[in-house]
Image 1 (cartoon, one colour):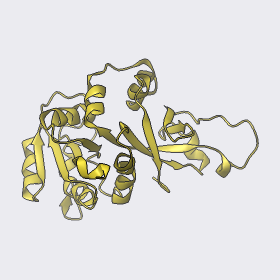
Image 2: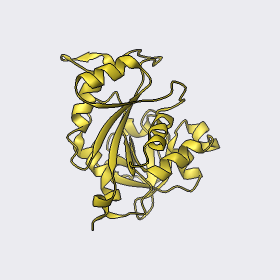
Image 3: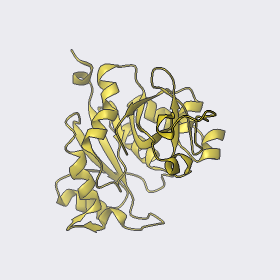
Image 4: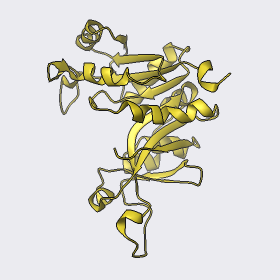
Length: 231
């Protein structure tokens, strides 16, 4: 029996109405459809998924998801992050074994990228967490603190994430040949891993870089990195 046939895989889309920068963003219209419906449509194309769930604390978002026929689970309204919202869903639904965290403001997310992030779980039952990266070929992206960089070991497990251009390259090789990898903020977790991370306190490196994935690394959780052509 294959690994994937044993375990239920669900994408969970955390959606808030009270976002400080753009209140009501999930319900904003894009060419006649709401943001959350556009995201849901993209994620539904992923063949590896058994369920696509919108997790929200807002009845307006719930009503919209139910209108277009999606599955919605209501959560508490005091979660400090989307990860905590996902963890509440995972805790309430032990039948879900693998959770894909899909941001609710990415209406153009590529279903193939989600498949790529799930793939390690389908071939290796020991994987706890996975994410994506691409090879940076533009110098401005490597230097930008808004583009998170990741360095990996020989087996493509993350060693560190940073807003700085890592690894440092002291020779004069062409920029396109350097080992800069940009991180894509899409995560897949085993249920146990997600609940463990949500129960952990913020860590020093996480706080310094403002990168939540460093909490996992600082607590010994290995993150498998798969590659896509571009973000």
